[in-house]
Length: 324
Image 1 (tube, rainbow, N blue to C red):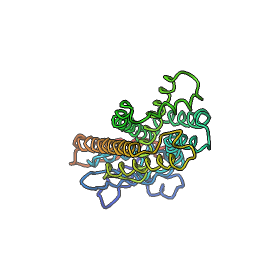
Image 2: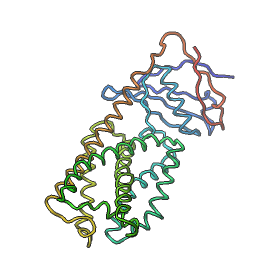
Image 3: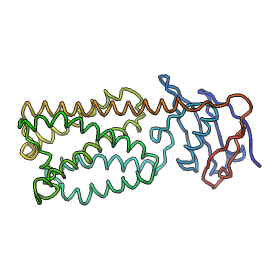
Image 4: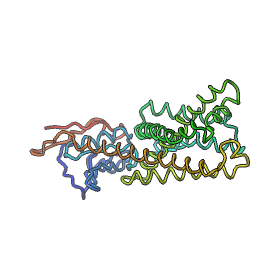
């Protein structure tokens, strides 16, 4: 027999949607806590604990309940309480895939691992697995795609700062040299340049952006994106300088330490961080605007939740239908 009832929700009291009272004692019961949280005037939905269900079903339930009670929803695939072992594993995989292209350059310069071997046996397989997960539409895919787009835009802005000095002959362009490492110094210089800039844009640029977006989601960063992104870019720059200075052949393999190279590389990273933070802030504002512009919900009358058959113990949760 269906359990139809109206449930009141408020920011101070969670809205509990689940089975009847007997079901609470069952091991595979479903319990979703729905708590609207308000911060800085930006409403956000924080889904709670889900027992015996998947992220997709719980997210659908929360959005339905939010629509029922007229609460704007900002979809947060990460940074919510809907954690599961598989989700944690995917987040770790995306973070590792994002950091491998940059770390493999440092490993090559320090002589730990040749980049052509790392590219073939470590970087590319990990990136392919991450790409398959994104194309499969896992809950973390939205954050990864936004981070990749932001990273591409930011690295293009970085090169707008760096390339004028390269074209004027004031700073040697070491990016084609990275492509030569990947190709084991085979092929024409044009191939080395293509491989080097492919690695730079789709490896380093996208990877650093994806890692930043994942970190913001996991740590639940909701403000000051530009300042945090600039600090993050300075941290990345310090790693580059450490590689050049500490590695035995760092200046020979990458670039010589001069006032110009230090200042231009720092300026480029600052531009990267600034653009990355601005794009992140733009994404957040767009999501908030989309949530606030949701269609109005009827507040009068008695609303009832009709329990779907998927709410029975042992069956994955499904959508919740609204009854007028």
